[in-house]
Amino acid sequence: MPEVAVHAVYSRKQETGDTFAGKHNIANVYTDYEEFLQSDIDAVYIATPTYAHCPQALKAMEYKKHVLCEKIMAVNEKEASEMFRCAQKNEVVLLEAMRPDFDPAFDLVKEHLRKIGKLRRVTLEYCQYSSRYNRFRQGEVLNAFNPELSNAAIMDIGVYCIHTLVRLLGMPEEIKAFSTKLKNGFEGSGVVLMQYHDMMAEAIYSKITDSVNPSIFLGEEGSILIEGVAKPQSVEIIYRDGRREKISYTPAGNNMVYELREFARLISEKCTRHPYREYSLDTARVVDEARRQNGIVFQADAVL
Image (cartoon, rainbow, N blue to C red; front, side, top):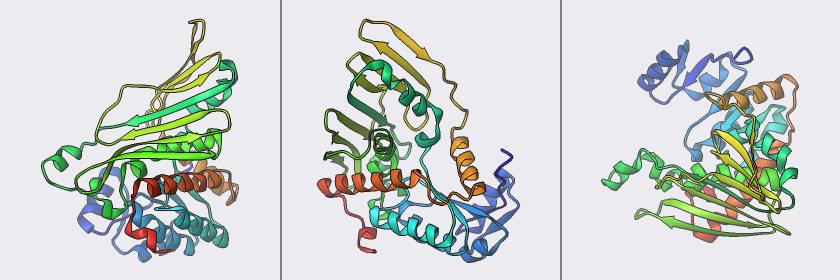
């Protein structure tokens, strides 16, 4: 894409960095984070384990670099708030890389909600059997299933559903959360129920099972079905009388392109305070409460 060019990559290990750079035709590799930030770059994309997001983002923004931070942006709401304060202080863009925010599929859902009458229930379901779970079952605990790295199914998978619900419906009046934990205390799957004034919503997520169910918006006059949450594939309306209406939508080969375009736009327009900020903070608040109810506590929770 013309708005973004990759100039350098940072990795703790030279070999890992060289391999990644060679695969993606990146000219420069750094193993020192401060040297990386002192190089001729305008922005950074942070895709490290969740516990490292806040300190790495704060350091980058202190160097006046714009930051696109992989979801979930922070371990908790305290970290997320500190990151946005730092962005304002340094007049840089901080954006959470939350693909459903930018994929046009959910804009289409919002546009067509009026067709299904009064909205009464929303179920967003994202269950994806992790390729690393087989090794966990054999006794090997990789990073993806290590709670010491601030990992949990809600942080990796469930956040897509929760964030999208918060963006479309706002903050709920009440939250009830349930989870299934593995033998090492890692949350493998869960459900978050969100009560609104006159409707219910639920986020269903898992790293230890697959699901073929679509997500669904239930109204008094019909339903909207969407295949996929992180990477939507199709949108369809089924009316109460049985009529079906396919909504015109062509999924991108890689829908991360949408968040990159928006990130570039925000930078070019110097829009350091944007509506995505509130979506990220509200999502962090819901996740914090769900973790509290399920007894999911990380070492990083005591940092700030």
